[in-house]
Amino acid sequence: MVGLLKLAGLHGAQAVLAGQLDAMLETGELPDLKALRDRYAPREAQCPDVEVQMPPVAVYHELLEKVVA
Image (tube, rainbow, N blue to C red; front, top):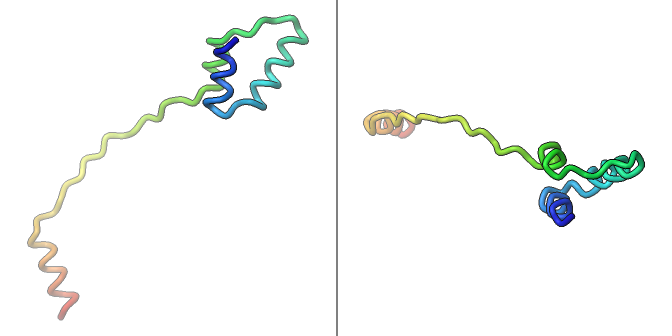
């Protein structure tokens, strides 16, 4: 199956996937690409929404005055 080769190559799961396939072959099972993809393909990261509130420029001027003084 080309899909298995793609899964192993793109996601760096060669060794783990090879072990899983060996075990399946010993029991006479056929590989289920969807199940293997769900198990070994990386999940998309969930990034939190971050709101940045910039302080007024006057705050920076106050800080600079304290550093220079």
